[in-house]
Amino acid sequence: MKSLLKILKFIKPYMGRFIGAFILLLISTGLNLIQPKLSQWAIDSGIAEGSRLIIIGAAAAMLVSGLIGAMFNFQSGKMLIYSALGMSYDLRNTLFKHISSFSFSNFDKWRTGELMVRMNSDVDTVRMFIRMGLFMLVQSFFMLIGSLFAMYITDVRLANLMAVIMAFTLVLFIVLTKFIRPIFLKVRKALDKVNNVLQENLAGAKLVRALSRQEDEKKKFHNKNRSLYDISLKVGVLIGFLFPMLMFIGNGALLATLWFGGLEVGQGPDVLTLGELVAFNNYAMMAIFPILMLAMVLNFIAMAIASADRIIELLEEKPALTEIPDAVVLDNIRGDVEFKNVCFKYGAGECAIENIDLSIKAGERIGIIGTTGSGKSTLVNLIPRYYDCSSGEITLDDVDVKNMSFESLRGNIISALQETVLFSGSIRDNIRFGRPDASDAEIERAAKDACAWEFITTKENGLDEEVGERGGALSGGQRQRIAIARSILAKPAVLILDDVTSALDLETETTILNNLYKRKERMTTIIISQKINAVKHADRVIIMDRGKITGIGQHGDLLKSNDMYREIENTQSVLV
Image (cartoon, rainbow, N blue to C red; front, side):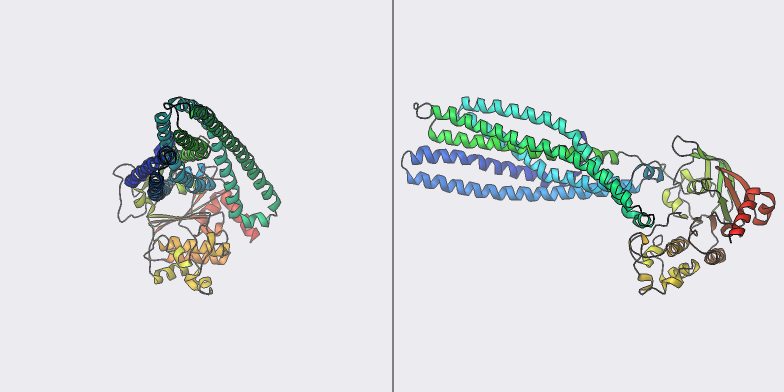
């Protein structure tokens, strides 16, 4: 419940309409509570006395009060819809902004499917609670209190009987709420798992088919979906049991009032009249209606609390990396990078890299090569602070990267990562993603340097050709070339190419690297690859093995002095 109250703080900008909605709801409920008294007046003073004027007056009053109450009820719902939509709009924006502040280690913890469910389904659940669940809860409360008060005014003994029945029902409601809430939380977690399997299957649809794993994926999805079905069925059965049970209690309460009240009618002038019995019975029905609504309200509350817990859990996830106050903003960055006795470990595991001392001069072209898992990508991911080193220090132009603003740091260090990511849109949009103000001439030059212009011009719409979801309309090599063009166009002080030529042939790869080295804008360039061809023309080549640097030098020197480098060269020469 605390989580739900925290989320309700997002209603604050819409508090005027929110409070106004419940004021109108209170007025509407009050007008509805007048109806039984008007019917009592019509029976006791109109029908019993034979006064047609009173009958017509009571009917007219009932019609007018009912119409006005309906208008207030409609306006209340409208204002509540506005408040709930505004709250969910702000909450989603807050969640997206919060997730955008996450570092790589945060995304290592959270799966895409989980984040999507929490931002969409869970937020919608809370919105529906505010729009309908809270509306029904408050309306039921007003109706329950008002009808109970009216019953005590009408007949104290019958009202005491109804009060005992309602108290028992409310206690039952509270007990069931505590029992059902954990089950709803299990439903949301099961839905997370279904969404994760679905998201992974759709993202890897081509791989699944390439390896003929459709049946295995169907079984995996079936198992997760079955778990969701079983837990949801359990909730459905409980809610299905609750509603008939409340109906039974309500009907029993009405039967009791009719029985005991009917015995009193006509027993004397100081006891219950027929009009009062009809009015009391109507008030009893008004009191029972909120009790019957408890089943539906319980459903809303349990789902909303479970969703609110998950939303707050996400909001309270702290970004692993943050800027320090008064972070340094550097202008005209040269591109000097230095590692000083740097070590890094993922979580509590062993060091992925250790004792790294490395100095890279501005404008220098560095190649990094090594076996899979040797720490190449981990090393370069520390420069733009995708992760923080566990010990040691990394500087850019003699400033510790931990002391720099993210905008200043990452705006000057551009990484083309191993996994090529393209966004839905045109080729033009993807190339200029890092520099939205780039001209078409600059886009064309970057595309030519990345050997992408040739295939772009063969497309029907050229730069305006849609790349499809995640670049699915392009080949792997075409996606890599667009990613390289995007990085070049950004004109960073430090450019990191992390194995982004893996899908390119030798000739294309050589051309791209030559074009990169010939550009007028001299930038510090770090090229990671498992291919000798990609790094041999660098000013220096760094060899990594098991998280350590085992060799530094130029291509020719390393062939003579480093056994691992020579072995890689010989192996790849044979393969070529």
